[in-house]
Length: 376
Image: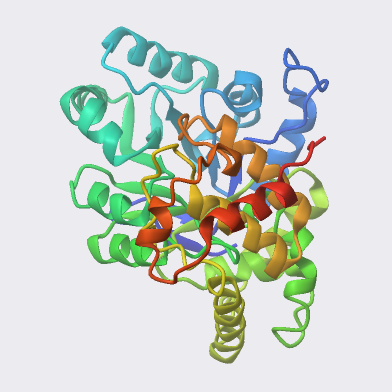
C-alpha cells in the first residue's frame, strides 16, 4: 500500500480508503441492520492490506454503519484514520451535538480524526455553517472531540471552490471518476491551497462497470475497467485518496493491489485515456455541453442533469445506470426541488439562452421517454 498526505492536516493516509456505505446487511428491508461479522471481516482484511482510512456517516446502512465500523476497528484504532459525517445542517445546537456524540458512542472512540459536514453547499454555508455550525465544530475541536474539519460536497465546481476559499475546511470529499471529471479544476484548486481531497465514487456508483464497452482497449494491457477507473483517479496528483465501498474480499484484494502501484498510469497511458475521454466528451457535447446557461428553469427542470444522463446512455451505452439516476432526480436529498423533464411546460426560455441552439423542449421529451422507466 502507498500513502499520501491528506492536504495540510499532517495525516498520512492510504491511497485507498474503505467506504462504509454499502456494508453487508442482515436483510433487504428498511429495518435491516449491518451483518457485523461479515462487515468486520471485510474491513479488517483491508486494514491488513494497508488501508488506514475508513469513512462512515450518520445515515449509512440504515443508520447502522457507524456501529459496524466501531466494532471492526477494535484492536486497530491507533493505526487508523477514522472519518465520519454529520448530516445535520440547521441551527439547532442540541440536534447537531446529538449527532456528534452519537457518532463518538457508536464508533466507540474518544476522538474522530476527520469530522465532516455531510452534503455541504454554498447555500448551506451561508444559511447554517458560517453563522452556527462552524462555531460548534471549532469548539468540538478545541475540546479534543474531533481533530480535523472537512465536508462532503455535491455542489457545482464553482461553489465548491468558493467553499474552499473560505479557508474553513481541511479536506473535501468530492465526486470524481472516468464518467464525471467536472471537479478536476476544484481538485487542482484544493491542492494549491493545501486542502486534502478524498474522492468518493471512483467507480461512479457502479456505472463504470456497466460502461465496460466504452473503455475496452483504450489503455494497452488494461482491459479491466474497474481497475482502470481506480488507476485514473489515483493518477491525479491532487487526490489524497479514493474511498471505495468494497463488498467482497476479491474486490478488496484487487483494489489494494492497484493502490500499491507507484505509478497508477504512465504518461503515455494517461495521454491515451485522456484523449479517449475527450473524444467521448466531444460526442456528448454535440447534444449538450453542460454550460448551465439554460438554468434556472421556472419549473425546476434540471436540464443539464437530464441531458448528462441521456448522454451517459447514448454515448457510453449505459442505459440501466442512466435510468436509475434519472429516477433519483425526484428523490435527491441534496436537491429536493429538482424535477424531471416531464415537468417542462414548453415556455421556451431555456432555448433563448442556449448558446448551442439546442431544441431543448423536444430533446427533453425524447430524454424523458427514453429514461423514465420503472427501475427495479
